[in-house]
Image (cartoon, rainbow, N blue to C red; front, side, top):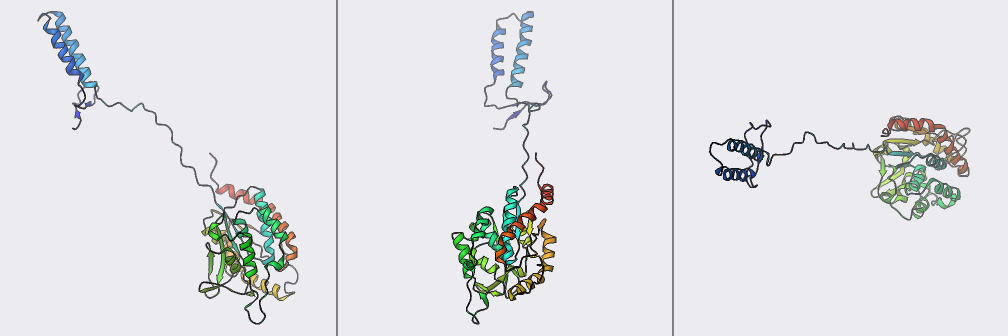
Length: 348
């Protein structure tokens, strides 16, 4: 049954309501008063006083029973506003052949200063270091692996005049997969993106699933140095041809703040002392305009290790490259911290 609403003319100035299913105490009071008044003289003062008293009591009972409690004095506990999402830092590791050892030094220095990288994108040499780092290895472990690595272990010469490159690339693929226990890209501890170039269309492709070693091999396949890598119906070559430092891909993967590492600086002295050096330097020159555009638009901070004295095939300078990466972070740290503070939410 619907609740019965009393007229608004009660003494509190607003409607009172009660449910007819509830016992009505006012009826009980009225009956008791009638029984008592029967024993009193009709015109006695005490009867009149008693009548007024009973009427007041009955009215109070009938109008107060079942009224809704007022909430005007209720105190609402304060609610905590939702906390802002932490800034996700991504790192874009560029290509540069043997200069890629500098990436190890950069990661070491960032870790030492408490900069937590959550998203990793890599091109060419950057894909090698990026895959190791995204797997969960810390920078010190990668440093140890880099110094102990034998260049011959990732070099598998192709058959002369019967191949499309000097190296097959299978040795590099096997090295990565063995080191990472054949973990696919999508199972990494951190989101990982590996950039390669579609040889037919010339478009970049971001690998985020599948065989990690195969994707790294494709990303590192410098034309004429490595054979192109066939994946499905497509052939892929070095990602540095179209994205020398993949800052745009780190942003696409969800990074709010992108740290780009550019290791493609022009070396001092003669860059053409051997055919491979000449080829690598040619690709570096070709990628300058693309790189400048991508870094200006998508990178928040660009780290540039001083590698002018190191060539792209100079693997015996790996220790110096690692140190150059650490020094580059030390130089840019004030700028990096200032820019990070500007995008991070203020502490409560």
